[in-house]
Length: 219
Image (cartoon, rainbow, N blue to C red; front, side, top):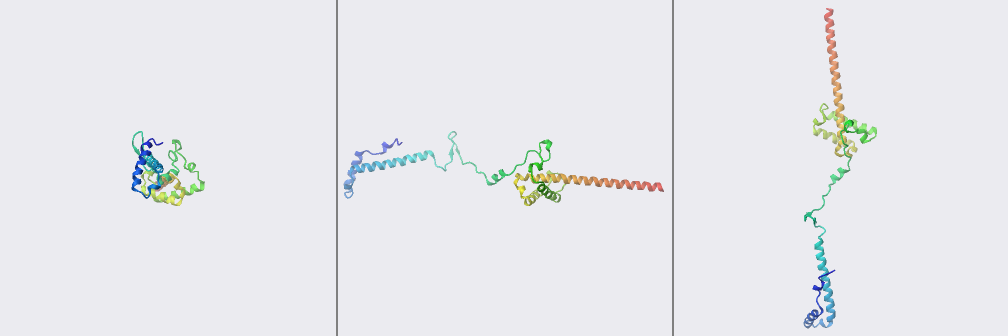
């Protein structure tokens, strides 16, 4: 266990000579200790020293717990593993967005009602609330990508404040899907109203023309 122990433990004759010199200068204590006891004590002390030296060498070879890990193959020191922030950990627990685009089933998309699997009343309540926000906050003649980012963010904040269940979805993709759906619906409504106005205007113009023609005939 200690291959260098014989180099450090002194022999009995050398201990005896050293003790005789010490004995002559310490007459009060020396008579109480024999050469044999001194040899035993010194040998035991040397053994303790050997153990301490061996432990120190072993500790240095192993390294301290706080030291960086050394890669023996490359000789480079590797630091401690990167810590995962609390924000990253919480984000991983949120529900990710499905692949594809909402409503585009023929192109690898998905249906929002099936993905969420909410009770119908809950779904309609959230849809109606976000739809009203879209109608008030956005220009429904513009597409999603042309909407002002600050207004979209405002709708997101109001939506998750009213319906906290929306916070469970990573990146608030459910809120965005509701906004996109509301924009398409409002745009279709505006288009329909525009067509109806044009139709009414066309009918009015035709009636006026007919009435004018009839008045000329009567004359």
